[in-house]
Length: 162
Image (cartoon, rainbow, N blue to C red; front, side):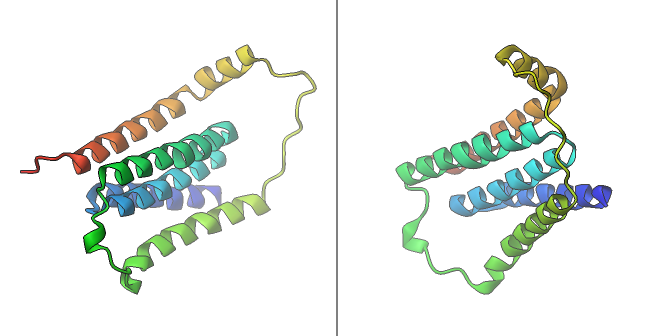
């Protein structure tokens, strides 16, 4: 079951990222990128890396996306003169992707049993060693995803478009 969830969430991550790259409207691109971040966080949780999943949600899907939204608002990239209420066809794909993520989280949550915690306190050194030795590749993958998002935001926000 976990293998199927992994592949479904991987497909959602890839689709969300492709849509974030190809979307013309910057606010819609951010919504697709957040969808990709949540799907990737669920994959990390599925791969027994709950700390990295928590970082993905709190830092990237939360704080960084709020920062991107603030930059878009400050640069007035939203094109409010062209804004109109989206039709059902435009809502369909985000609803499907979000539903898949929520269903996957629900499936994982029903079969999840919490591991017993060790009695010793975790120091900052232990935390850092665990983060960069055990989850170092995951941290680098997340940072590359953030780099791609910044490059995409810069591309969308440039003034002299050819």
